[in-house]
Length: 228
Image (cartoon, rainbow, N blue to C red; front, side):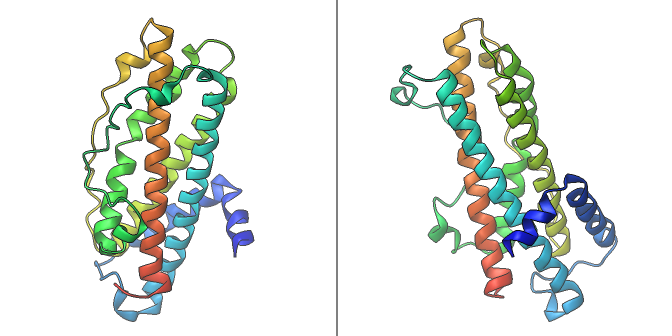
């Protein structure tokens, strides 16, 4: 199964075409329940899309971890950033389950809406991250490339989650929490700017892991457990 999913995601054009086809398919379809009333014509594509989206969230989380590790190695060595009082992530005000066990206590619809809000909260923030990273000293080209890939995959993941919400009859609202740290990324003080990037990428890693955890729980309930 992993091989087939890897093959699907190896082509961004294929993924976008897949998601677009589902958006068109469900744009004018009457809303249904998460279980789709056991109708295989609805349940089967829902399960397939959820499986693909969950796998994508794992890829995003893994690539974000690599971005954080590379930034840490290139710009944070010896600066003891972990000893500083960490800034609160801009998404910390969402009521998010702390772990998989707590996530199991939420219904799939609630978790999907939360995932969508988390992803929406990173849309503009990731754009600033990518645009401002070029101001870093040294050669940040590899970091910029990784950040752009993550940004693209976040967009694809958002499209997938939005499509699933429509398929289960939930409103794909545009709720998000705004990030207000642009000034710190543009600071003339290199240490302030570097610590701001470090903190932002750490928050991105935190949220990408949350999204992956929540989608795994949703997949477990809808696909594996078949419990809505």
